[in-house]
Length: 90
Length: 376
Ligand SMILES: Cc1cc2nc3c(=O)[nH]c(=O)nc-3n(C[C@H](O)[C@H](O)[C@H](O)COP(=O)(O)OP(=O)(O)OC[C@H]3O[C@@H](n4cnc5c(N)ncnc54)[C@H](O)[C@@H]3O)c2cc1C
Ligand code: FES
Image 1 (cartoon, rainbow over the protein chains, first blue to last red):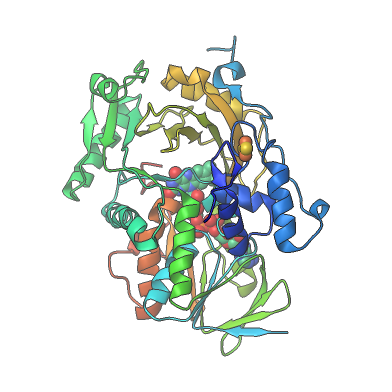
Image 2 (tube, rainbow over the protein chains, first blue to last red):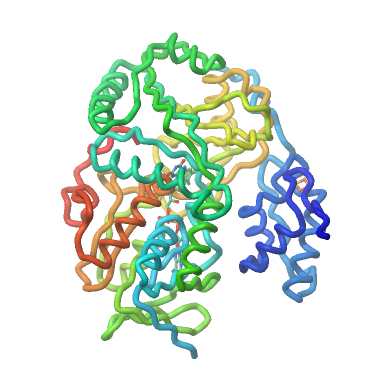
């Protein structure tokens, strides 16, 4: 019996889906994120990042520290659109 | 040093390369697709996934009719969802000139059998109650336009190509190539791919790739930025395209996020994936001007990719002066939606030497004077 193990809660992605992508040839965190949308939820991967990194390292047979973490793209925390132009309306 | 031989080598695993490879392999051709990184790492994985019939010339409209039909069949063909949906595209004109352009295009589109109509501001508001219609002159509405998720499409094409015997060599760039009896492509890891026919489908990198062969292609990459919000309950069905110089375009994905961009004026030339400081304030203001409820939408991420432009706004799909070398690039920001149909026709052209429909507006030896496509 296969239990559905969710590895990224925000995006509801399972460990199996991550393993599938690695079997398809994914070798970086960046690729997993773009293809599966793991780490793209409101927590911006703070919850799932280290789990997925460890999984990728294990599958590739390399030390965890050799795997580059997700780059932090602006904005670092979700920001309401309106906050970007408050008081500047033309 | 290993050598791989095949009948057709495709450089680039974006939408154009993978779709063409699929249609080649479906005709029994031994095809190898090469990418320097992962599938979709170029423009395709950075696009916002919009699909529309609303173009201004019959060849583009016919191609899009075919493409959207192909997108609609993918779930069944691939055995997984590509998140295809038809929420429509509502194009917005805030000037009489733009409204006149819409009117002229709608005549052409209708003659091609597209279900498209001109809306007055009230009708546009009825369709999208959240829309701020201030200054709006007219809307062009096609309910059959839509969206799909690029990575799911690429995955399907790869699966189908591999099932038919095709091969993918990823994370391995073509660093040089040479023409002897066959083409020899030298890859980053020292291996060689040999093929009598090669398709350049390297998106924004295509021009650089062809240069050492003495071929100068009229391709000019430009940076385009995009952003995505948190998931929200579905409230916006169509893609909205605001054609003002300081306009923008965005849609809500099936999964609830709003994804959008704008076209910078002036353009930002070059192959660039860095992001600017002005983009987020600008896009936030432009989107909220059109749909005020978006003020409260939390923006999650921001990235950049390339539009590969040509002088007249139409793609380049053709053979090159070098026998056996083909090119499919210059998608001018529409490559994802054109991809399935273009891949199909490109594969046939590579094998049969002639186009199954009128492709003269994509020919390499055409007159590139600006102005053909009015719906950028
Ligand atoms: C922000 C943004 C929004 C967009 N929105 C839309 C939209 O809504 N709808 C739409 O239809 N289009 C959209 N587009 C345009 C669309 O993304 C492109 O037209 C399309 O993806 C082009 O696909 P391609 O296959 O030609 O190129 P690419 O996807 O760029 O693929 C080229 C591939 O070639 C590879 N490559 C390059 N050099 C080499 C080498 N030397 N060796 C091996 N491989 C190499 C690259 O790694 C890359 O994977 C958008 C683009 C951007 C940037
Ligand atoms: S748990 Fe993966 S993004 Fe939040």
